[in-house]
Every structure is written in structure tokens, then in C-alpha cells.
Image (tube, rainbow, N blue to C red; front, side):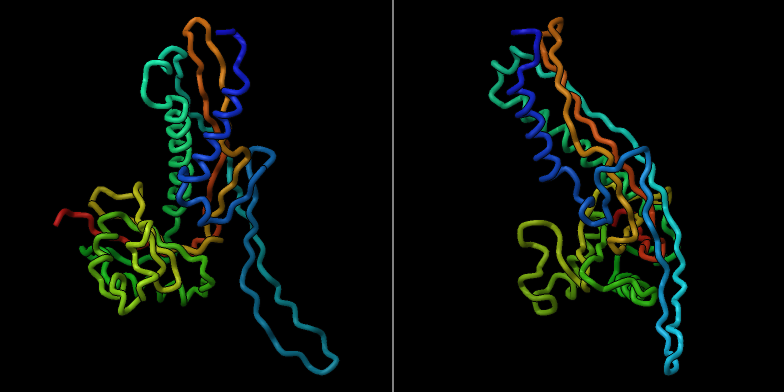
Length: 276
């Protein structure tokens, strides 16, 4: 094996990592407001307040809305996920070791992307539905839905609701969520992926949602524009040959960050996780 890097190996590996990350790396990146190709160590998201329409007299001046403007800064963080690919081991295994490590690195970075978005959601506390020693009930769902409407959160198909798997199981016991007589056969949560559209929002089961010391799981119902995600560098790979190890070291890396833009666009639903 030459001490130089095999260019075909490197190019194929980089492509496989990027495709794996785009395919299944992150579940939540497309559910939030994303800025890509950020230059610098942080990104600025603009927040604009509500406008009010008014009348005017004939030949009078058009009233000014005087929109409130503010900004939210999101700091980028660098993350790495690497491993070794032994040259001779590749000849002895029945699996594609390169592909396995490519997928593992992409999945690890994808989970980190989701962790950052969930951490940003967890900072919201303006709109909440109390836990009250119960799991996810139809009453809690409707209360959260009402709060989103009262806060004038747009009902434009860009609302998302993340729940834990225990809460997902509880939703499946609610006829209004799981019965085709209520939601239609096309929107049942059993077709392909575990996600479904209900009440104008996409409901998704998600691991990693925060749970406190009292076994209270925080679920989040939010609008896409309420959370900002910035990417200075999408997933990249750096592969180097180490002759003393007779192996390639594969390093997958990215630079990203996430932050809360508008707490008024997120409802936090507390659910009891105590075993039944």
C-alpha cells in the first residue's frame, strides 16, 4: 500500500458519508429554519414582530406598522466522529467496512444535529401545557393546539410536534389520531414511516426529548420559524493513510449550531413517564 491516499477511496467515502447524512442522519433539520454556508463563528436570525393594519383618510398618509425588529445569534460548534479502517481487515470481513463507518459517522453527526435542535426547543417556556400526573391525552393535545392558535402561530403546514415513544403509544390509543374514520386512511400513522399529519401538523416520535427527575417528559409542538439552525460546514470527511497502523483514519466533521428564535412559536407539553 502506498503511503499516499487512494483518491478513489477518499472521493467515494466522502460521497457515501454525505449521502448517508442527507438520507437518515438528521430527522429535524428540515423542520426548522436553516441557514447554510455560514461564514464566521455565528449566524444571525432576524425576528420581526406582528404588524397591524389600519385605515386612512382620503389623501391621508398610509399608517406605518412600526414592526418590532430583533435578532438572535446562534454560535456554531465543531463536531467530529472518526474511526480506523484497517487495510487488511477489509479483505477478511463479509461487510463493507468503509460503508459501515461512513454510515456510523453520518448517523452520529445527524443525532448531534437533532440534539442541538432539541436543546434549543427546551429553552422555550412561554407556552406550556401542565403535566398534572398524566401522559399525553386528547385534552393536552387540544390545549396545546388552542395555545398555538391564540398566539397566532401560522397554520400553514409548517407546524411540527415531537413526542417520546411512550407518548406516541398513547396517541395511538386516541381514536381521533389513529382511526381512519376521523383522519382518513391516507393519514394513518402506519404507512411507511412513523409520522403522521394531524390537526394541520406533522407528529413524529423522537428519542432524546428531555425528561426531568420526576419522570416528566417534555414534548414540543412548534412552528418551523421558531427555531434557527445554522451550518457553517455540512458533513465532510477527511481520510488519511497511516503506514505505522496500515490503516486509514476516517474523520467525519461538521460545524453547526441551533437556537430559539421565537418562544411564542413553541408549546411545551409535559407528560408523565412513570411506568404504567
